[in-house]
Image (spheres, rainbow, N blue to C red):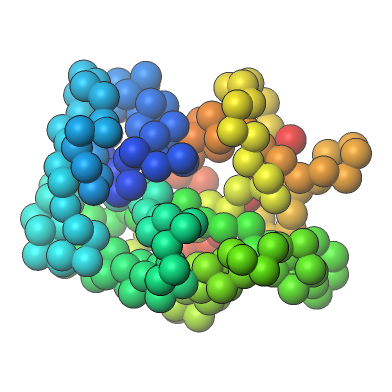
Length: 218
């Protein structure tokens, strides 16, 4: 498999750190954009850079010449401005992708806009706790209202299952879908963060989705 040169935003986060590990394990080169480089372990093939995702000039320069941008950006679930920052900074990421000339943008999406029944999205089902509802809606609105109108970038919005298994194993065995929540035989929707990372890097290496959302589950 051809080695990719990737800009990874949010490389020390819950999802971003596993994507970083998966990229490194497959021999890809990574420029890791983080808030605090001290939180990033030393890894071969990884250049750590402390930068603000809202700094378009810096991020554009970092992205130039890369094969893809993977964004695991998240302002933090405890951040009271999470909803506003999610919307603002994903618009910055779109502009940085355009200005840099990078053709491929892979986004760690949310599950909120997946359909859990005909015509019913997860975000409207009552399944999401009130304390994170605004943030979930913000990312969902970015996908529905902004990202789906973008036709000059080869983007994907990769929605996880309903629940992330933080300590679940890397099995490499999962199902992929498009807009419907994937549930198992017990009616549960879940995926380990390690297997989510496997599927994200699979998509980087062998693109199957273009300007669309896809999802994952067991």
